Image (cartoon, rainbow, N blue to C red; front, side):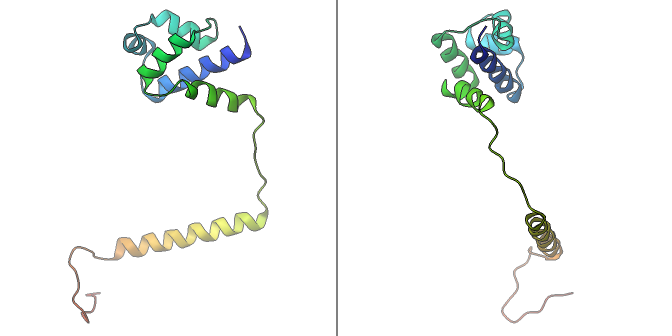
Length: 121
């Protein structure tokens, strides 16, 4: 089968697993044989547009979802390199967030303070 068929099958499997479904459960929802779903996932079967529509409906996605993610896999990854300065900035941001979260956890928000009332610390 074609590379696109294989990638669509891989995407189908990923979507099914994200939803915690077995091939049998997806087959019941889509009114398709679980064996056929396995063939599609392995790239051994070439699903029609109608079949993809049934699968998409059963998974709660659009047909485009099969192609968008499949096309992403075939495209080279668009990454970027982080400099040591970038890493330092991220680490400082994480430390600031941790400090803020510590402060939030220590603050008692259960009882609103009145104007001019000091904290009971």
